[in-house]
Image (cartoon, rainbow, N blue to C red):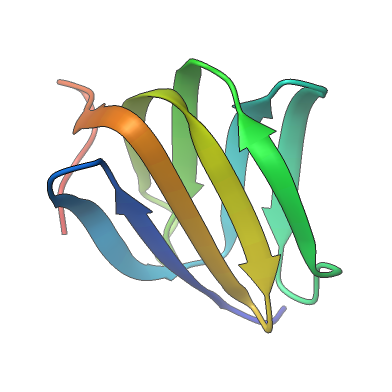
Length: 92
């Protein structure tokens, strides 16, 4: 399975960046799962959890409030008005 480069940023800082195998986020149209090879897209991010699965199987969870999510060439960019790693999530 192709890997993803994921960047999660809030209005004032980078929250998490790294390699992943899957990203699950909530959009205004519902929950979306992104794997390597996903078609390019742009979606409006709704408030909720973002779950990032790393190549080693561990997960990173963040709380994100409103923004957008884009996918292009196995790069996922999540820009939120406010975002922070959840207490159970692991950082880099």
